Image (cartoon, rainbow, N blue to C red; front, side, top):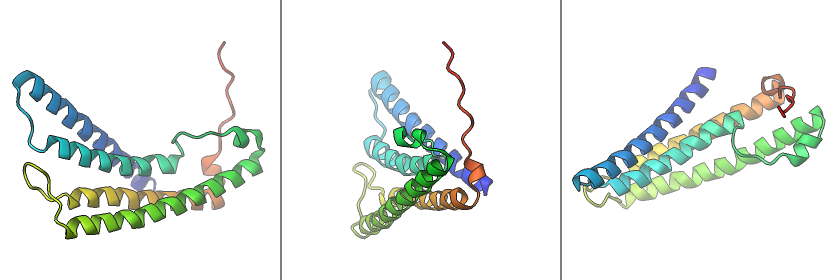
Length: 165
């Protein structure tokens, strides 16, 4: 299971690299040679969308997204666990609804034959890859929920270290 989780995180990292490469190549070609990559803007938008949904998958399992934990930090271990399980269940519900809606977007994009501007490449495969990232997020959040409920020691918080002054 951990290899599956690591694979999703590596895929998300690869999409970060692709977006950075697209931006870098576009800027360098434009400013150094006055040449642009056909559909560079469209590819940038589509790759950024893919990156966002795979990024959701990568951060949701580890719980490494930005959080505000004023109430959580004031609780004892049992209270923290209850808050973690509740928050993860809410996240699971929201991302599941988002995944259903994104599939509808993939279907409509394919049906309407939406194409890129310069090369007339269909955009639905990009939306499908983004949707697969969202599906991965649902799977990882479900795994996280299961582990939080039945194996909470896997998410034990290390004791706080003293700040260096």
